[in-house]
Image (cartoon, rainbow, N blue to C red; front, side, top):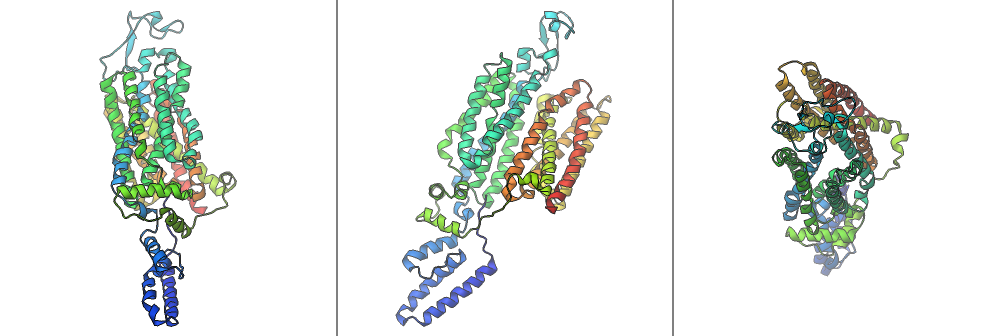
Length: 543
């Protein structure tokens, strides 16, 4: 959170005039010998007025340097700057978080991917109504198929009556994210982003490595898969929040864009790693061991100074700021702790009588929460469903997955342009309508012969538009909730979304019954999302 003094220019001008008047008055009654001394104080007094700390009794030797510092460094942005320290955090630390987070998001999807083609060695019935698969004979997988991957599903023969076991794993992962969000989500603001990042990173690495060796015990494996979701998204979100908090305004823009781009790099490159590894175990172990790099950077990554400052931990804030300024070769500030305490006095903090229960008691807030939770559910469903549905599209599954992930790259730029050009509400409504229209077209043509390429192209277009919609939704979420309830509203919306998203793997599986069924659900959700995108902002404005 960026903390700035709330003094405005007109108030500063009035205060300066008053200060100058006071100086002139005091000069007229002073002996001539003290004239030069008072003139020297003039700059210090003006500096103190600008920072809201007027003390005309302060001596030149003790007060002028401190007041000059307050004039130069009015807020955390000016203290932090954008130098070598921030470049290291953005281009090294945050890049690792983004790429590894992208890997974690896809690793389990490939781990339990279904075999594209299989048959019985002796020509037996594949899934008899009674008895074993292939009547107890051998199962043969078509390893020459372009979409074949030696996944856990293949290794464990999760076919026929066990064909939903892979989907159950993905559902357990979503349930695990809900559980871990409830445990670790709020702790990021309590015990610190750095601690949560590294705790979740280590837990994810250890739990997942253990789970890979217990796949024979299916239900235990389900539990471990759910528990091993600490880093993504909780830990990675803490890290991607912490890095921009090291920076001034320019650095934050660079950090946000860089984090987004490297996330896409991770998601677009991982499908090709899966294709060339062609083995779920080594793919999973290798991607999980990448978390070690984040552990090694622990000594070089301090806590967010903005978080420490907001918690009034001025001694620790001073230590972090001093280190950052030393690395950036900025001018040292004497007695940093006292400087921060004085700076805090010139700032006002927003207070409100709203509490968590106000989200349910206040009619406008409740309507806003319902609309935002609906939008979050629809956008997340489109996002996750688009990734999973890449397996159902014609062509190479790995290339499709990579191209689907690549559609995220331009969404931040397109979304920002639409917001600036048409506003948040109508941009969101337009994206929802457009994505729904693409899904409706696929619903009408997917069973027609020779439409595979058209369906694939339209699916990519729908995924691109839904990514833009997700960005606009995130932009709105940061604005429409009151500041004192912003994180609460976002967390509640996300938890509802995760609950709804648990059904996504089964929706995609409906393709095996009728290729149109997944698109029927996508279209219905799109209609609901369009209504919510229109009503949600109306509710926020009226509140």
